[in-house]
Image (cartoon, rainbow, N blue to C red; front, side, top):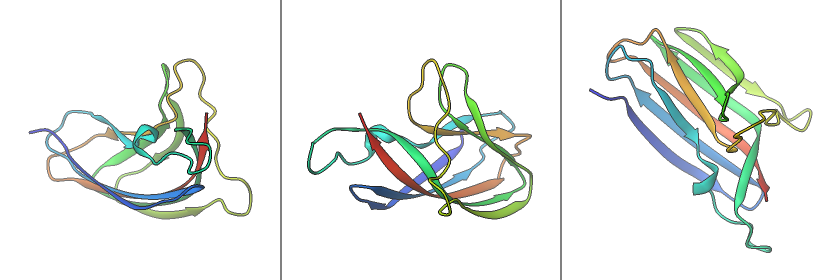
Length: 135
């Protein structure tokens, strides 16, 4: 059985988006799933330009039974955090501009998560607060 990913857009404004993603692991396969897909975020209301990237402003993470690598999506993904098994954490980068996307070739602007040592029934949840960028 494949992983079940549930995404809830809590806020999608002109400058910031808040996105909750919950995953239930389907089996022991290591899976990479898109957590923040910039192509689904709203366009800039003034310029009508599409969202092309985000800066990570805040992150809440809860993982039960599974570790997760959180990465910027690119030809060679770039690690943001390596989150251990059975871990809960809240990160707030509002004291500075946030964590910018530092990936290179093939950069999509998306944030992806890859499971580490998953077992069926494990779960993880993210709440992302991101500052939107437009191309």
